Length: 472
Ligand code: AMP
Ligand code: MG
Image (cartoon, rainbow, N blue to C red; front, side):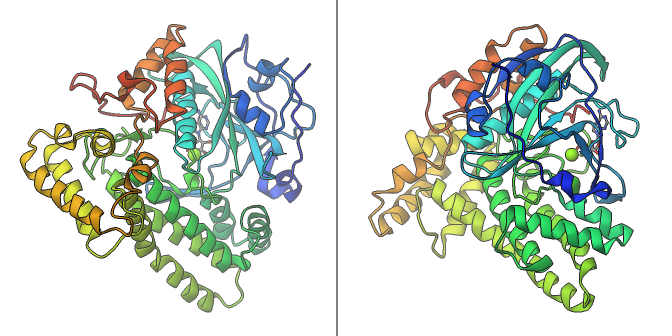
């Protein structure tokens, strides 16, 4: 039976100003490398034939209405008035089993009117990186776009050298970003802003009232998201406003990476020389991004000054909001259900020990949960004193610490997608060996279990990845 995708498209109904209709560019001899059957089931997609042609962009499935979305964005703080889907094409939307509308998009599907100098393609490496890391994030319980399929072609594209072209099929609650709003705000198109605001509210936050209600809802979602990233050591790498989703999902896995040794200044992205998007800067960048969102949203308000005052209050509340959400997450990592005064210091002191000794972030919390934490540090002496404080704090809990272990087990992943393993996986895939890809996917699907202990190992100094690339 041919693949059936029950499209029901709403974005396309917004009208011409929001996108350009464009078909994917065919890709020769595509090979389906990996297909997310359980996600397909969840999206009510049925059938199994012809999938490779659809996911390569060679065949337009029944009901699709392919288009490239218009958006702008602040890239490393500088406004770029015209970005848009330069290599991504939205096929359309489906409603999943829980009633949520989801976009199905081909990333790397060829040029669009927004491609600027780009070729509209993606190569195999970033496609597999996004596939693995986005699915790992999902398994960790972190809001994220998903990966439905990856195909490769013998067609070569040029990056550092000739590399095989590939297409990722991405699934998202929507692809609306901060930059989707900025583009109309900077053009002074209040009607389009209003239309997009109503659409975003109806699609994502039906309870929200008007632009300020939407701002509050997105700030709340972003605060929760950043806290979740911080708690697993995730570094997005390009938190530009065009990569900041209104839905509150993690989107655009370019030079993203999980931190190995703990240090707040950790940044991997080769294009982030100043460390703007370093691990420890993510909370303040999220606030900066929401300030840009606020600036765009209020352009549609009749009483601009009153709206600006209210928006300022919402954005100014965010640092404390992120701090509280992050403390909740880190307290849970230590088995503490409800943080109390003093718990921030307990967390901070542990992180300082980790930073000083360059301890591996994931290993430390795993050892606290399952083993002997002193083994995760090179100098155990100062750790013992911290450990005694922590134990005393646990005993003060309402249940004397009885629930701590279960809470820690579901808060501290045993396996994360480590950079060196991703690099190894990509190198093997380039040679046609997909065993490492499937092995990673199997382990990362149950990150709180320990199904494949070898994948838990931090990199040796020789294996350490120094820089990551967007792959554009
Ligand atoms: P990104 O860094 O992937 O979020 O992309 C930033 C902008 O560059 C977006 O407008 C992308 O659509 C565009 N872009 C990235 N890579 C390509 C490419 N290979 N061809 C055309 N446009 C691209
Ligand atoms: Mg992007």
